[in-house]
Length: 225
Image 1 (cartoon, rainbow, N blue to C red):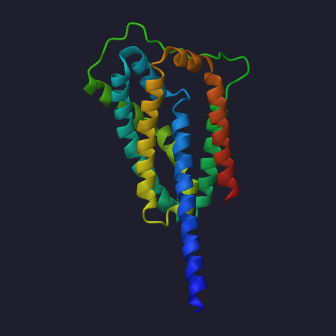
Image 2: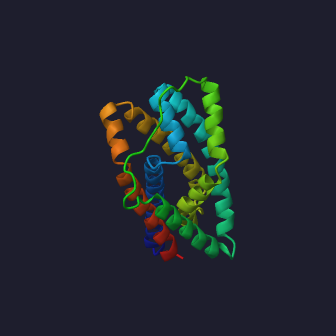
Image 3: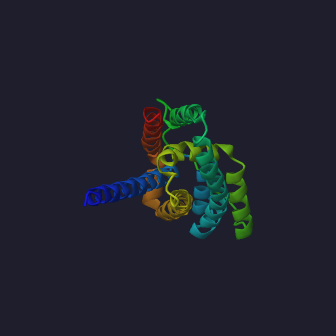
């Protein structure tokens, strides 16, 4: 009956791998949702449209952005698996860590800088939904920094869990769902005037938190080499 302890040990290992992979998905999704509060082209376009033209049109922009984001996620996650199998993948991981540190440095608020984001929402004509979706798609798909961000965010998780057959599809699906869910959450909450004012006043705090999280991911990539 010596094989019974071995079977139990294997089952314990499978459960642990499953738990770790699920936790990695949750961490990535949480970071992605938080990143949507940090100013950038996609964020400004979605929030500006939501504030000026309403929640529905803001979500039309978010849908277009997510279509582009899905394409970039598929390319980044599938290509990432192949890259991690190459002998030179360590150099790419170091480059990804450096990119995250650079992004954290760029996002981190500077001493003496303005603390309030300016979203010009005056005199904005209501655009057709189809135009908003198209413009949102182009805004994302033509931004190569988006793919670099996805690669940097998912490299460590792919390195540890890509051997699980379900992980890469689940990662791509999780990125898509978290992204569209995040846009819906923040755009809806920004319709409430007190919360909108608080966000505009305290954007530097949001940026500082997000910069620390990105730096943490960078350190994790280097430590796990």
